[in-house]
Structure formats: C-alpha cells, structure tokens
Length: 238
Image (cartoon, rainbow, N blue to C red; front, side):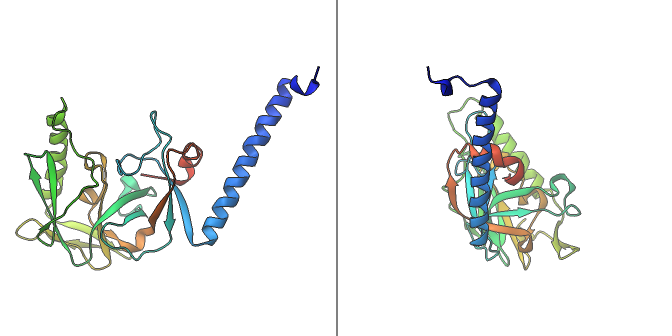
C-alpha cells in the first residue's frame, strides 16, 4: 500500500498548516502589489451598502473592494473614511464605507414619502434619483415597522438645531436654513449608506471632512469571497 495515503494526525496538521501559510503569504504578496500600485483592498463587514455590496454574515461570505488612494471625490462616489475619536467616540477608529450624496457648496434636504415608504433626498432643490438604494417592500408584512425606523432616522436629522463638522482639529458649526436644508461646508462631503434603514452616516454625525477619506471604491475585487472572512477583522469597513 502507498504509505503516503496514511498520514499521522501530526502530518495532516502540518499539511493543513502549510496550505494556510502559503495562502496567507500569497495574499500578503497580492496586498503589497496592490499597495505599490496606489490602491488598497478592504473587506466589507457591515450591511450599510446593501444591495450593492454584501457583508460577511451567516448567508454570504461578503465582498472585497479595491480603492484608489484618492480624495478627489464627486457625487455618487463610494468612499472609505475613518472618524476621529474626538469627533465621534461611538465610531472612533472605525472605517466606514458610504456613498457621497453631496459635496461642498451643495444644499441637502430630505422629505418623507409615505406613499413609497421611502426617504426622498433633495440636493440643491432637485430630487435625487436613487436607483441604487435598498427599498422597503410594499408587500412585506413588516413594511410599516421598517418605515417607522426610517421616520425615526429622518426625525433625528431634522431635530438638530445645528450640525458640527471638523476643520483640521477644530470643531465648526453649520446651521440649517429656514427650509431645513443644510449647506455642505468647504472641504466636506455628505455621505450615506445605500441601505438607509441600517446605516450610521452623515444623517447622524453630519458632514465629513474630505481629509478623512482614505480612498474611493474603484471596483469589487471579489464577490462573496471567503477571503472576506480572513481579512474582515483587519481590513473590515462598515
């Protein structure tokens, strides 16, 4: 008989260890090549950008995205940024992935749309077409519960008497206009997740300084990749 077919437990362990070690070394080499090309890889670990991007959970292994290391953001870009601890301790040092809805000089406002169970977004007085967001199913049994969650997020935004944003190390204020809209300050962007029911974003913490931006999503590197499971604890973005 072929003795190579009969491995001891220690030999089997060594084989598995060497396989995993080889995979990790290949991943590290790939990350280095990507970094040298001016890009970065991140694993999606939160649900805020569904349905476009999937996170790692019980149903899916999640997505890996590749970023170009740029801060030249524009409307519709999907960006990754980190929030400073003194700005918001609740999400300090966490990397967030959101869509840029408005940029410096824009005016942004919201209106509840009870008929469509949605939150309409207005930028500079124009209704923003958003075919990318996760919508509430009108036929779902819990549609009213979901809509009330959306209402609460809307009320949290409109109840703010002033908004804070950061310019360097200094906190600045921006006041809502008479119609409830706010102007995005110079050097800032207003970002939201596509999954409006499950996203902690600019509706909660206000405009984001562009200097916090770590990169713009250029493409999805791997869909539903098991590598997300390995990398989400290190490179995870919410």
